Amino acid sequence: MHYLNKPNLGLVTCPISYGQKKPGVSKGPDYLLKQGLKDYLSDNEHFELQSYIQPIPESQTLNVYETAFRNTLKSAQENDFTLILGGDHSQSFATVAALKKRYPDLIVLWVDAHADANTPQSSPTNNLHGMPLAGLLGHFKTPFQWLDRATPCLNHTDIGYIGIRDLDDYESTLIEDLSIAHFSAEQTQKYGIEFCTEKILEQLDPERKRPIHLSFDVDSIDSRYMKATGLPVESGILPQHLIKMAFKINQNRNLVSMEVVEFHPDAATSEEDLGCARNVVVRFCKETLNFRFNALESQISSQSPNQAHPKLSHDRRIHTDGIPL
Ligand SMILES: [Mn+2]
Image (cartoon, rainbow, N blue to C red; front, top):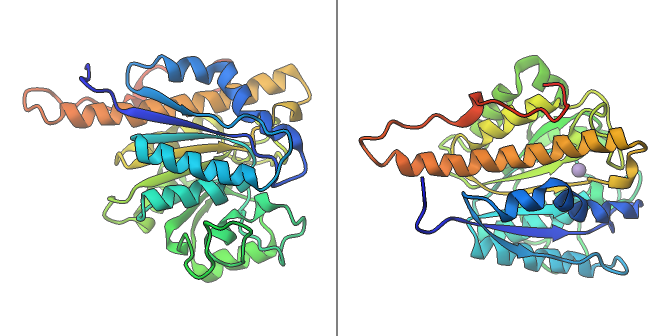
């Protein structure tokens, strides 16, 4: 299938480490681009790349969030899809706020080992990367002008968690009290991640019409495969299950954006661990975008009555890059 006009993919980089205490996480975007994503993104038959690059700042100040907010908003306004590479998870104060501005009906799939829903009062570490959802929900006054406490950016019915397994008491109570949609990593293994993803989407959007943002924290991945992050957590999501999740998310063709956060190249202590972590993340990004843009293709071809509706590519051969699948 050839397009007269290919859809546009906006790439936003957020070299943000302000939200926690390990500065190397700001190298995440550069590393992931150099190690496989750049070639894939810049030479892709399914989309045209537009880049919104924030260079690694000399010092981390609140300005990094302002730039992330502006770049994400610009990308979301100018493109069909936005891919955001981080950075620690505090970037979501900015990225989700910008995406919600562009897509007021947005729902957010938060794939993470942690719930990131502490407030400055409840947080044991006082790190901002553990607080973005509480800030976006309007539970505390953030230092950001684009987040007004009087008008929360997100409602708790806009959020679904997948993979959580390392929660503070405050967060567990919050999730229970507000009935926030969630499946732990253990549940994704018990019930199947496709089932869990389906259930979450059903709860957030029964009619399957709302735009979806995927906020992907690499520490959602089982720590056997993910050492290149500040806080590896065991018993996480398995690499092969990530691909099934990506397929499921894209089945209804509503994915408008995706961010990858907390990839910290220096946190892995051996080349082997770093290579494994990189392969899992790069492959997950590629497969998600393949599903996303193949889904678009099948949507277009399904308008032609003579053409059989092409199956999505979940049964095609998968390159394992040495990862057990
Ligand atoms: Mn997180």
